[in-house]
Length: 434
Image (cartoon, rainbow, N blue to C red; front, side, top):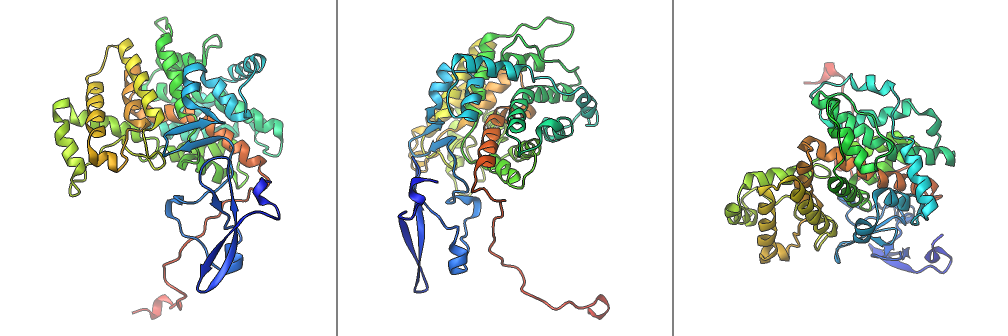
């Protein structure tokens, strides 16, 4: 129980139609305080109305904190910039799961456990063959991740702490294999099995891009870039897909089903698909000379065009992930030969950031603005962008799921509604209707 939940916890007063109601106030370690409305309906017979949950805290969490005004992202208190600069993705996974950075021995043991679980059940190879060859990789991902519960019965009992942790390790370990298999299947190439002497990111690149008739050598620049991309995407507080995982988990569903629900939610163009949309916009602009035209269109209220990859529900200053992704993109392009659209992106950012219209509306570049360019330069088709995102976000999803399962105050999610439909009507048999 938090320190402000006891008998002397602070309260706020809500007045409605001359009646007052005392509601507990709760204080986190950072961010806005919250009003606990859990008993409001019982006291006043009222629900709150908050479409999109823009002002609602649906859970208590110690995992990730976003300071949207200052532009900070913390994983367990550590700035994402430090983790990107000094750590690796599996260290970040350990941090999200266990709450602390690992010791040397803990890191070695965790890396070894993940490495030993990278293969998927051989029968899943036949499962993939049930999809059309032109299936979207995310369609394959949703089905394959959900199907894991049919293959790994020894890690679906959520009441068993050992099985819960085994499910976490399996999800982190197998997602690169599942994503790479989705890519290979939709391109008509044979699957590539994981190789245990490679890094997590290097192994993923090899499974995506190696072919049987050529020796594949991992490009360490690209592997390090891929690893940092994973870190940047690992978690972002209670986003739509994370909330979906928690909501599915609140029913007691097995972890594989919960993560599959998160994958499905991430597929949406307003969430994980935003980087592909931003890349399409940059392609449509084409050259830096056309940027003033598109800036003017974005400012015109009668024009449906909007700058994609700008603005964020939470970040109201420069998204720290965007600056890091821009640097990663520059490194990748230096290795792969460049992309004229990167110059378009840089000039578009400069033009928007010096335009008072965008500054006043706090429309700054977000993570998606540069990530599509980066992934394309690494060889991924646009259809795979969201699959890579889901691979990385699995670390955050599974940590959030674990936290939710261990929360004694957790209840099955059941949002209420403001009903505006017809009231009770009399049924008239079909023969008597005019």
